[in-house]
Image (cartoon, rainbow, N blue to C red; front, side):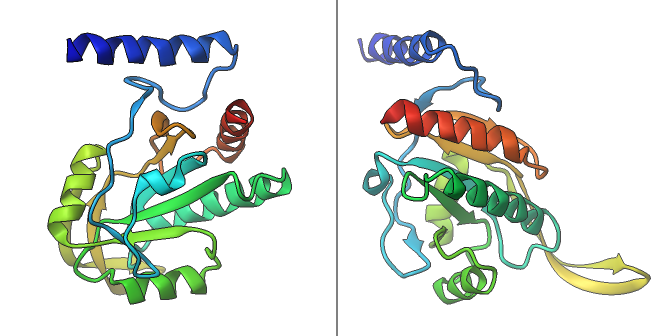
Amino acid sequence: MRGIFKLTAFFILFISFLANGYTLQGSTKGFPKKAPEIKNLITDEGKPFSLENYKGKVLLITYGYTQCPHVCPTITAFLKQVETQLNKKGFKDKYKIIFITVDPKDDTVERLKEYKEKRGFNNWIFLTGKKEALEKVWKDYNVYVKDRGIMEMEHGGHKMKHKMIDHTAKLTIIDQKGNIVEEFKSMYLPVDDIVEDVSYLIQKGE
């Protein structure tokens, strides 16, 4: 019976999207579906985090680490553009950008807070926690993570050492009811498409 109920709920959600005549522009395969709860993680303010506290907002979740040399700065730069455009539309309090670390060893609350403030991500939420708790979230959200340690890379003819963690580069979008509705699977995020989709979800949920 439980399986039938879940299947019925999925089709109700799916049909509701079709009925509105708008097509989300990210990857929607397997969605919409209930977002797995994010447990035992803490914010850059040192407070426990729960998705339940953000029901009614559209959530944009990405994954990375503060010492990332290339992928994460690229993703966050695009997300900053998304934030700017959504705020210009008057949606500042209707959504939240969330950054989940893939580096539980070095991304402490203090480091995340410093990273957030230095880069002007003041309205974002950065999450960290114990390795076991983060591994559960990575698994639930289908995020690949592999710590490769310190590696030497060449920049403009100069060799530099970086901490390298291979991880899935993507953006997960959750609607106001707590359902994952789409993902953008690239470090090169299509800003305009994301702004359109999030704007649609915000207006649909009002």
